[in-house]
Structure formats: C-alpha cells, structure tokens
Length: 166
Image 1: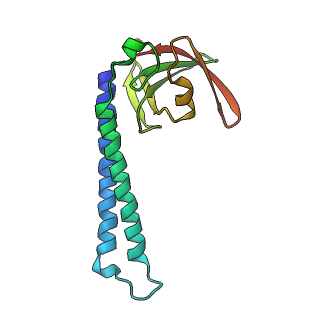
Image 2: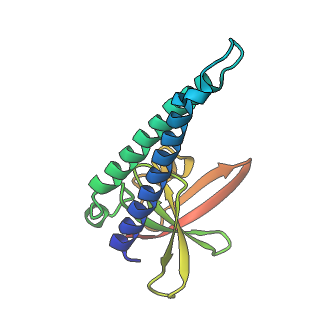
C-alpha cells in the first residue's frame, strides 16, 4: 500500500471532520447568541444550554486541529530503520482464521477507517487507525514481524500474527 496516499487520505478525512466541527460550533454559537433565545424566566435555559454546547463544540474544533497537526508532523519513515511497530507504521495482522486486517499506527484519530487499494490484490482494503493508548496499540508497540499479539475484547481472546510492517 502507498503510505503517502494513505497519509493524504487521512489528512483529507481529518479536514472533513474538522469542517463539520467548525460548522457545528458556529451553529451552537449562533443559537446561544440569538436575540430570540433570551431567557424570559429562570426556567428558560435554551441560550444557556446552547452556550454549553458551543463551548464543547469549540473544544472539538481544537481537538480536530491537534489531530491534523499530529498527522502532518508524523514521520512516516521511522519504522523502515527500526523494524519495529512505531508511530507511522502500517501493519498487516492475520488472525487465527487467516483473515487479514490492516492497521495504521497513528498519534490520534483512533477508530477512523480509510479505504485503500492493496498493491498485491488490487482490491479495496479498509485501514483502521489505532493509537498507542488503545488495547491493541499497547500490544503492538515495538513489536516486530512474526510476533504474535493477543487482546481480549468482550471477554474473548483474539490472537494476531504481525505479517507486515511498512
């Protein structure tokens, strides 16, 4: 897989999320400051609630910007010299039933999914971003090709072999 294309797609998706957060923050701010929403009595809390929402949305905007900055600053070439899973690694995991799963080890935006074309099969493959603080991320950090990792999800143990680190 082309990691530079993956980076471009991640940044594009993060920009979309950021713009959605900016739009939501602006709508909440407009609602909070609208003259029609001035409280008429102590039980009329629409403007107050909207101001809380606007504050939360502005924090989300800041988080989105931090995600974009983290991926922009990420070194995508470090793992080529270390041979270990580090930030910026693209990892192929294979489970006990020979199903493969592609993981991108990123600094943030855990859970985001990106569609990519696999070079070998020319099929669309889903790449999931995980972070070092996730259970799988903690297990993968500093591992090498052919290492086995095991995590427990909902009481069920799942084992993966690390097939590729790119």
